[in-house]
Length: 100
Length: 470
Image 1 (cartoon, each protein chain N blue to C red):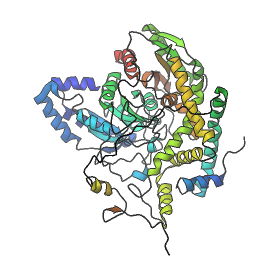
Image 2: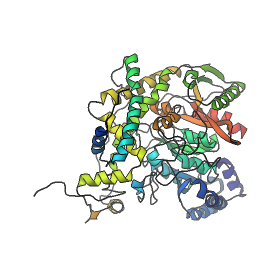
Image 3: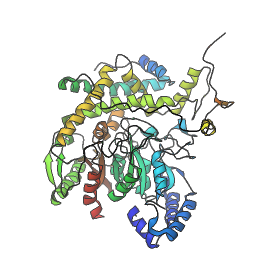
Image 4: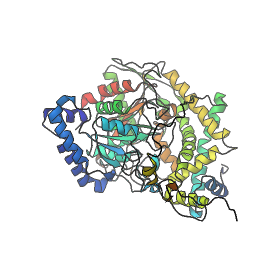
């Protein structure tokens, strides 16, 4: 059967999913993901046989008022304790805009 | 010893929570070096046990239903102030900042949480060999797997460290290990139990439930953790589904076509023996056809990884968990996730990213969700004529550690359990017999499936067929 995915695409998916993939990992991921994709393609047969093209949703939205229900700041310390890098009560992240 | 037996002795005063918790800790001390069911054991459980012991003396029958009963929790369930790793290196040093709703309920009922159990990383696996912290062994035969992903919870009960452990089930992760370890394992109707405080894997599939020695214990613990929760909008009310009444005897449907291929001959023999026991007990057996169920596994391996790829986006190395530094923010994400996630998790995230990406979305994700709807309709049709559907819980008994490596053969372990999660109905696995391999009797379970909201019916038939023989 025709390959459904290439090694290049594995690296591209890694980029999209924000996961660094090594060369060695890419080889086994290509093989495994290809075999799973071949296998799951059977869903096209089922929907073709049954003549279904669109999903019938069994879900609905549940809304609530956007109210503050806890004392502001009451969880700050306990949550920040789990953060890898903190500065003055805030999460520290890398600069994302280059202004040079 | 079951919870019911324990409670009776606690009330009589012939046994105390202190005795039970001491015994639990000593079993763990003695056996867990080899079994590795636990990732964490809470020695201070003894302090709680002493308080419980005192309460039984002072308050007698008025004490809450689980007072003094030791329970173990799968490590993807948050227990405030304790490590919650999800079996992953990316959360190796993460401490839970709040209690899951089910944990709150267990604590209110007086349960003593004695430890956290091992699991496949983020509940992805069928053998508990995918844990970042080493594999769990099956206490019945340590050369074999306990099943998964709730394999630590199953092993903890099977080695008699606790009467009940809580697991989570996305595609069979409670029922398959229960079958492999000779236990009762229950997956509730989707929405019966709050998912608040559970690490999300496939949010439209995940449910928490008990692994236990008796059906009555599973029922008791389920009733305690179930209920509508404003912190989980998908939880259901008592009137969400039409009543599924308890009956004297049931009409039970068997999808024989579905069991033709890939099921061990010995498993079928145990299954057929159970069918005979059901007939002897006065139940009616009929054949049913569920042609979509076999193909349904394919829909699961689209929808589930799609949900996995979205849910696991939160592990970014910024707010909690592992952080690997890099030159740019993108670098931090990629390195942290590249280092922190294991092979199976990466495989499913990439697969999910693929099926959700533009151009493939309609061909895969859209179709898979359509198949789920067709399966719900097919199953609803069958429940017009039968009360319960019966299948084996898994196609084999516990397999040898390290013997299943390619993803598709691992996925096929879930063939009977996955359709239940795809459609959201409840199911229970109960021990039905044994097959002998290398002179060791390995347990085999059967699965009862009911319509949405039919949880109580499953407990009823389970008690009639299992507990009456204990």
